[in-house]
Image (cartoon, rainbow, N blue to C red; front, side, top):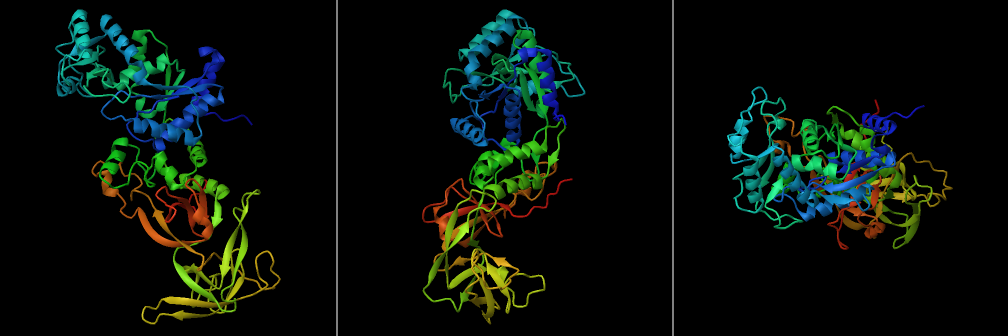
Length: 551
């Protein structure tokens, strides 16, 4: 059966077959370093790197750093870290639009000399008014007829720092009646007396993103400029610049963005969450950033599988959160160690087990892994189980602990429940009394006793306290920024993180950041970077069961 190609791959294969670019495929991922990467960027990263790899090509990492007021080296470092975490490598092809400031300036001079650009003294408000509306054409700027000589002189003086911020801009001379608003003499350069994270104070004029982006692709000889759908209206402008400058004709191809339920992908809105203290930072485990999802415990492979399953589309769509969590769950099931952690403890006393005795019970770390190692779990007379695992008068299909019932401990013995102690004032069960079948140890069972249910537990004498951060969606609405009459913060979920104390088996005292665990019969967790040797903190990654089903 022939491989099914997405529309981008179809275009690439047509170009290769026709001999275009000598069959070479060269893509790039061009983030702006003004925030952390988020779930939407994951799709763009995968498409660019995986498309090039599939056809024996290469991918550049280029930072489109044209706005010194919002960009920081911190973001540059975080973006590189996230891409490497996903498993992609740009090798020695790390570039910055700021590398091309000199060349872009020369491009601007060329356009001025050819009569395709002019210096405008109008204010931003006046320029916006001149542009008209989608249904009404714009009007020419009073400065549009300046001579080439005057425009060259003024633009060079702009570069020399003669004029204050906002006093002048350089605009392309295209068509003020174009149905595409972006073609109505767009601004190419503005004055900003601001230090740049790489060039310092070398420049006080900076190219607009729309002027730098396409030309940077051309400078790098990018064959296929793959970007999200919101840039489709920018393509005619990029092509206009390329045509007038006579430079390398990169081909832009747009695909639908990654929109996922309960997540937002506006860096401006994500920054607002950070600045207002609604999250602890860009890497808060509830954030839809790659750093946040890594902290939450999402494995990088799961995100790549998710992007593959979501597909490459031409139209915007909203992807169900259940699909993302299903991909995460499938991968965690494969790689996570199964461990014993009790969140809501109930004390059980095994009355016929010798007081003071402790034994070590062997347990396999991950039954899904044929090469998995084992560890030893301590067992003693007094243990904790989950409160929900005991009922005084259980229904017929409750296969856990109740008076007169047998139940097996995971990696341990079968217990027979004899009695319990209740706090008369509160009605809470305080203790449960059991006996154990001495010959019923897992792997060595010769007791002949059958127990339908299996419970996890921790030995009270050996249990360690830990903190669990039970994470939920950051927003209560699946499309928090999709309401014209409501602010996205109206849907902020104040219960998106609930902190609980729990008791863990001692092996987890050696847990490290980046390890994945299944807290048996509960959920998947990972150690949070806030943890210390004396205080283990775990983030809940995803629950054990999914409501997502293939259609």
